[in-house]
Length: 217
Image 1 (cartoon, rainbow, N blue to C red):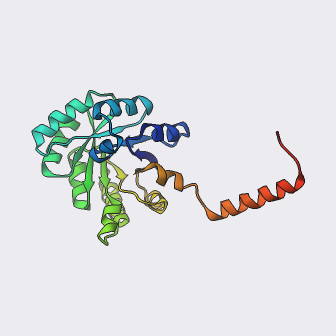
Image 2: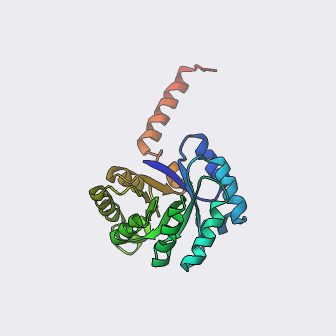
Image 3: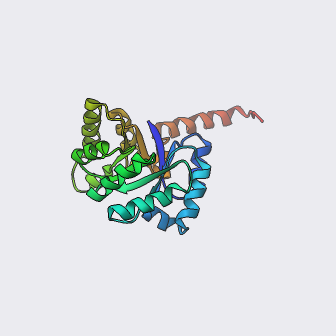
C-alpha cells in the first residue's frame, strides 16, 4: 500500500520523505489555509520535494470553471494530480481533464455508486472518506471493501485512495482490505510505529545495559 501524506506542511513532508514514507501528497483548501501560504507557491515546493503525485484541489463548483482551474493547477508541475469533488460537475471535469492526460483525484466519495461513476469518468484515484462516515455511525472501512470488490470485478484501473484516516488502525485495515493508497496526516503515520510492548522492552534492555557499565561509543 502506498502512503500519501495529507498535509501542506512542507517540513513534515520532508521528514517523512527522507525516511522513504512518502509516495505522494494530498492537499485541500483547508490544509492550504492551515499552512498560511499561497496555494501555487506551497504546491510547487511540495512537487519539487516529492516524486509522486501531489493532489491540488479546484475550488470552483461548475464544470467549466473546474476545468479551467484544473488546467491552471496542472501547470505547476508534472506530478500534479488535479483534485475535483464527486459531484456531477466534478465528474464532467474529471472526464475532460483525464482525457487531456492529467491525473485526477476524485474526492469526497461516500458511496460505492459514486466510486463506480468516478472510475467510468477516468479518475486516476478515488478518495473515499473513512473517518467522516465513522462520524455518522456508518462503517467507512466497509465502503473501502465494496469499492475494492467492484473495481476488481470489472478491472477498473482507478486506484482506491483511502482518505479521512484518523487512526493507525485505519491504516492497518485499509492495507488488509487492499486499498491501493492511504493518505493520512503525519501524526497518524508516525503513530504506526508505537506499541506499548516495544516501549517496555526497550526500557528493560536499557536498564540491563546500564548495569553492565559498558559503552559502545
